[in-house]
Image 1 (tube, chains in turn yellow, brown):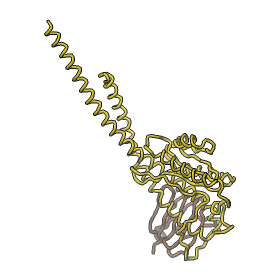
Image 2 (cartoon, chains in turn purple, blue; image 1 turned 90 degrees about the horizontal axis):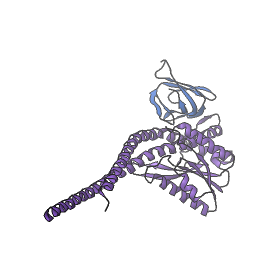
Image 3 (cartoon, helix red, strand yellow; image 1 turned 45 degrees about the horizontal axis):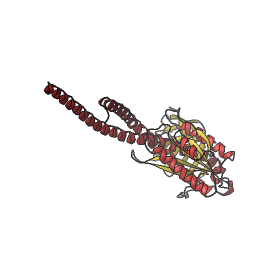
Image 4 (cartoon, each protein chain N blue to C red; image 1 turned 60 degrees about the vertical axis):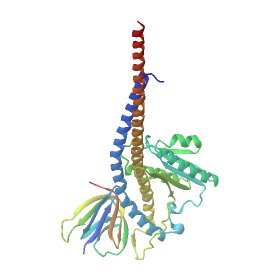
Length: 289
Length: 85
């Protein structure tokens, strides 16, 4: 049985933890709204770009297609771009992402491919490094950026496309969380490079005039498409992080409340017991006289 | 007949409205788009997109950077990387 003083100390410490989790929950709730709005605002651009891409990609094919669309002709070296968050306190979000990344890596390795990781965000580093110490490539730090914007996506795209042009990998996949709701964020894997040709591309019936040529436009469009995908992933990550954080912190606050109630009951019981013992001692002492 | 004009950046949908004419700074020269323009696609250079709300009205200028313009059945869509202001 813990002493009264110890119990009191524990109650106080749980109380201050609860204060922290509650504050974090409220911050996450406020930030979530903004992150969600940003993610939604980015959708029209991505959608339109995808339609344009689709109609162009079907027209330009074969050897004349840019390398980003065609690929290097082999699929031996794979790059997994894993988008994790920079901060913790967001429940199972990061471990789910890492799990997905490990699954993908396992499948690729089993198929005899070379796998390298490219890590965005701090939180995926440690667990992936533990599992695949020799396969961690570069990392992209976003922890110093307060509001993730298009610039970060552009920088990321430049580095990835640069690596691709330099022949450091053949295929790149992007692993990021898709924000469904505050309760559910699913890790998603999409192929980033070479850019997959959209399946339901509407083979334009109208004769479209291109200025300059189709290939020039496509060559300019592809990096932009990659950039948009990365930007989308970063925005989804922001929204997912806040959503997961809100849910996790809500749970933590509730658990702390339960624990405080339990400890308070225990504290009151021990106090009562102590008083009773003291009284019995006094009465026994008085009777002895 | 008005022309449906949309200006989109990665951050948001900047404009979506019915206008009379839009002059776009294409990479091979400016071009004006009226309603019923043939399907057309062009990359754009940094410059001002001029939006004419009605015929003969003062154009409204929007500075854009990087991207391209697409004219289809649905009207004109300008996908710009960045929009000033």
